[in-house]
Picture 1 (cartoon, rainbow, N blue to C red):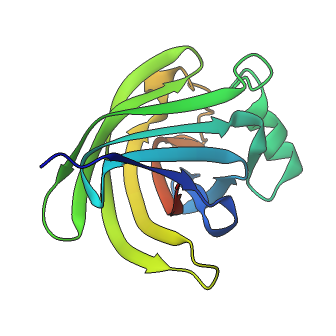
Picture 2: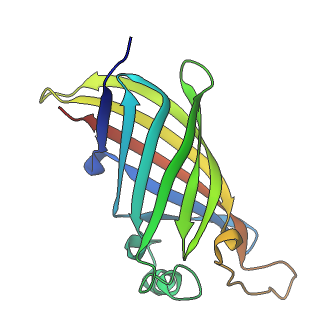
Picture 3: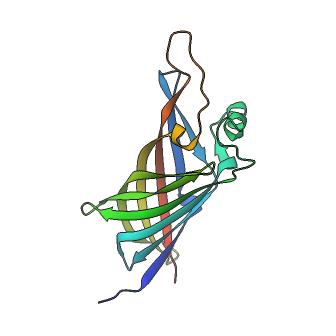
Length: 179
């Protein structure tokens, strides 16, 4: 039996995209992207092999520090003026068990597209008080920022570096089923 493609769009008021980077090799600093969009195309309510795409406004980065945010938007990192969007296109979504998936896709930043693998926890379906069908996911993963040319760093007197190469990503996302 062939089920029609179901389209889901992001509910941005109930979604967040955050990251953590080790700073001075002793603590993690959290940041987020305030503007992003995403969609999912599934086979009905089955998300196995669903197609996922997302765009992130690189200039919407917020680490709760204006000077640091300006540096992150500069050519040392995201070069948001010349590379306004970060993109993601899935290449595969594999169901591991009832609630867990592995999402593979191409992440594009600063003219580079590289594959990343993300862990996806399925939160379930619900009908909101307004009659909208919604689905929720928690997404996590990590990447090496240098793979996309985000190379800036500074050596510390005590050895080590100011900012780790590894970036841990987390997203809490709700999607609304489209009629």
